Length: 299
Image 1 (cartoon, rainbow, N blue to C red):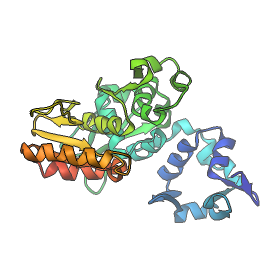
Image 2: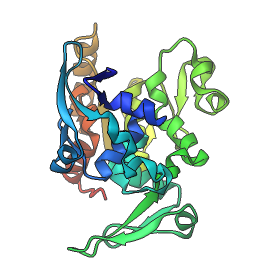
Image 3: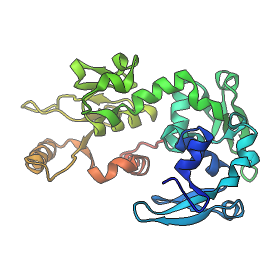
Image 4: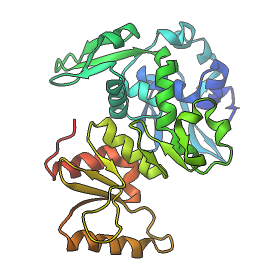
């Protein structure tokens, strides 16, 4: 989508501003011009006031267009680096949820957990973080400069977190550049997660990162304490709980293998938490609820 009747699509506007589309959408969200509803972006009243409107394309369907003169708006002319982002808006730039963003910043030592909310550390302050609190509750949170998305340490960790997006690509070296050697191992067949575990699928890497960032001790591929060579996807020793991701049951042999393995768990009285293909994009919703049933509250 380029432009229609002097209106620019979001991607065209981002190109004119010479910034990534993800960064533009984060900026528009942070300033209250658009909101996310399900899989769609919707205009707010402020966005409508600034000239945004819904346009239609035979190829792309309905999308938000912006008048060309919006390029002169002070939001874009005062310097994007001056923007202060919440974790939710920063996460839009990073391809993470607000929760995942805060947990990554926690893991890096840039914030710490408060009684409620998040508190800035000395390292985070040095990077431009600003401590804030919600006026209605007093719960602390942190705002970050727009430039943080380009921080080399953060970028390197994001390469690892998002490495699963390139699993199966033929030109792995071109995808990762120099950091590729720190991520892809075993002759190109495995990916090393942030915590050092080696995984071989998108699902496994996503679940491993979720557990690690949530500070949950876990093992990968541990042998089950039964006769026979059965291994779990993940084991949480503090709960004596096994976690299995079943994937696409329509794949040849997948359903049979699932039923056989579930029978092993049932026969031996082993506690099992199951994750399906539909759960993978909703781990922040699914896993805290299911883990709570086993006695673990996730922050």
